[in-house]
Image 1 (cartoon, helix red, strand yellow):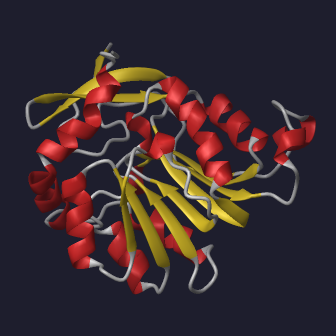
Image 2 (cartoon, one colour):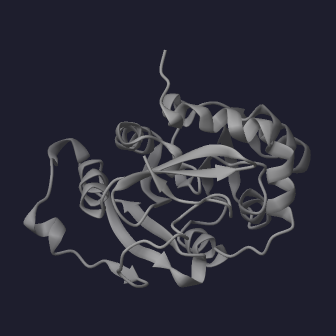
Length: 246
């Protein structure tokens, strides 16, 4: 039986689901500009897979109001229950995102303030999930830490694990699985210091691509925000992450 600190994240958010929901609903939406950019990249009425959707506030509600069809996935039954009550016309699934196999493809995929709770090998494995659920020209957005490493923060007095690969590895994984980077921000000061990746499914066969190619390295990437070492405000889901290296 695994005792890795990442294994406790889902249980932590289930135990504190009501407190977390209250915090999200009563806090400023400090990363809205990225969700607006994501939405603008989608066709009208697009299907969106929201991985780690939480209680649906504010992101899923915003997508619902924009006329998108949302399938939200979260490991917390309480969070999903709140989503079903608030946004009943959308689809909600209690599941571990790592094991997701819905047999359908989406025009947009989000893994926002959720993906960085996975340990490094699971983060790598999630790119198979992204690719398996991505329609042609699908838009993918997720956020990470600014540099490679693992950290232990806290929420409601409990330890909370976070991890990140390095930027070159995320770029390699995106390219290998058929995505081109559209925009990348490191500790965006206009999004509460989040490090963001926005990508689009490319018109090519991802099975033929392994690693970095000269053409990939030469592509144009919109880099937003300062490139510098992480601060104590590294990308996070909660405001109480006091970073301590494992």
